Image (cartoon, rainbow, N blue to C red; front, side, top):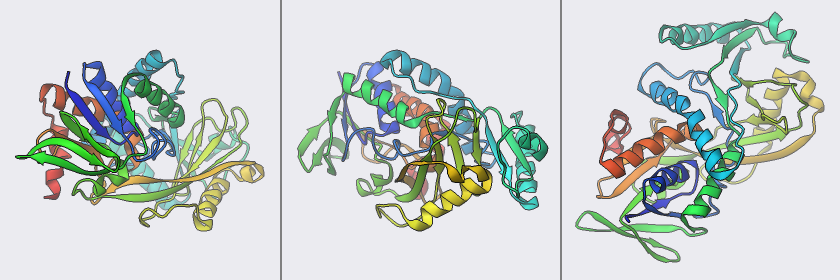
Length: 361
């Protein structure tokens, strides 16, 4: 049985490990902290290829394919682990706060319609009849009914359970370097000794560039969570002000997320938190009276072109799956499938060519 080493225990690493394990591979996951509690834990969980306004092209198609895989991905994982993940095809609404934003949203909507994708303009009057309050500047907006969300913390609990039931887990261990012999992977050197394996997959998110020579860097994001009443906000609101995510069970309303290139600078800032609160109140003024549940931050893995890095590295038996930026949760199913097929069947794919690290060489 071939042994695979996966560096990074977030959604990408655990999803790849799960697929490989199901095909008979022995998996060891190495994480510098606790498995499942990094960027994937502090994300928003949106599945939003259309709401993000992605340009028509390969990356949009990549994201749409992964979105279409999500229900099966979740159904299987829930059956395997017994953990309810709360996948919710709630639809995502993109409000316009100005005529300029309205025109841009309509332009994007029309482009998507030419591809056969769903979407519709919703007038302000319809919104006023549905919500307790609505920001005075909202003119209307676009609803993408096929976008949605998953409770990423429940998803990570499910993947953690699968991992601890089926993998060897090595936590609080930093990879120092990859050892090779004649261009072929041999083992990992860590701060706690050596770990040998037949192949290695780099899924270390924003820290991947510290392990391999890759243009991956942290993009910090701050988030907040507040109380919400049942049915008060029935879908995700995604705008230039903030994204506002009601959890399926209405246990909380998640508001995110700022973006800053500040390296690994821990902590929340007054500036960041105020931006989120202002975005919430400009969307739903009555939310000013809500209790705050939590304030947190995390690091997205960015790349210089903001697209992921996938596929083989120049060292034989070393593979890369990182740099997913804002779309790590969304892209987990398709990334796991492509990387597993590459390792298990040596099966190529056009997306592996498009998102290869070689584009930076």
